[in-house]
Length: 374
Image 1: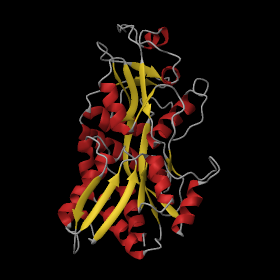
Image 2: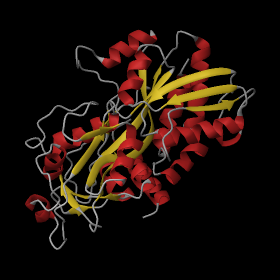
Image 3: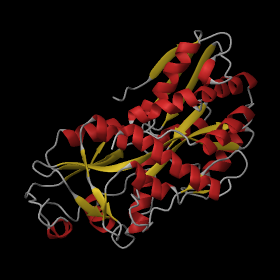
Image 4: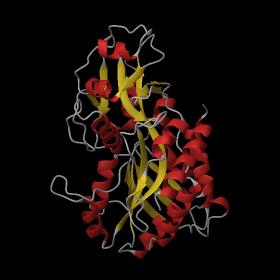
């Protein structure tokens, strides 16, 4: 199924869910010029600005935000936008520390205490106003692998949890073989690669393991990896490492798996193997509920869904912003760029890179929230 098809179907599914609930390679930085006047056309009503805008966080959205910056660059000339793909955890920390103007994160700000802090409260305190979670990019997480001679692989949550916890160590283990009858599995050692940086992708993946295989995955969920394996930085790091290692396996966003030509496991949730497609990911996204209120558009995903044909490992990347910035000029800059990021022009291009554009209902809510930033 083409990536554009993935975009369309995934967007439709998320659109329905929110309506019912009421509501490329990775660089170390991105610096692009933007400018004076008002950006025109499909970029919306975003006003260009002079000066710098700094952000960091999710590497999962790196290719998507690059697209937005490129469009902004074409519309404007006198601004510098610098996005550092340091990982969701680092982005949130830098946002709370007032080192960046907004953060990208593959999970919404925590509203309960963890490690002695409540992220949403700390962010609000730093902002001097409520901090909002604005979904900007949607997409599934692949269990990507590189095993010579194995073109098709089925896993379930229990077996995946044991692989990523180092309890299953060779590819012809009986537990894997039982899910892949008729497939010749080699005795190649399994090499697990995980995100060494704090990552929202890690958090979403461990939420899946914890929800769908609680007896096999006994660790707490979070941005910091607690299983076994070898750590690599960011999405590009784990994808590249897996591509270069026979027997390698990792969890990574669809766009990175595609870019590195990695094979992706089908997931059996109890209703038969499910291939990662727009329709299958959309069936899980369709169970999402909006947990934020007003312009805080945080979502809750059912990772333990047993809906037939549903691919259960999906994520939403948020831009985390202050609702009212202490410096009004900063607020204007953030608003200007995010108006472009949420525009129909940019969102329609994300499918080309393995992401799903915002569906109409969500896009409307996001645009309303972005326009309310001050």
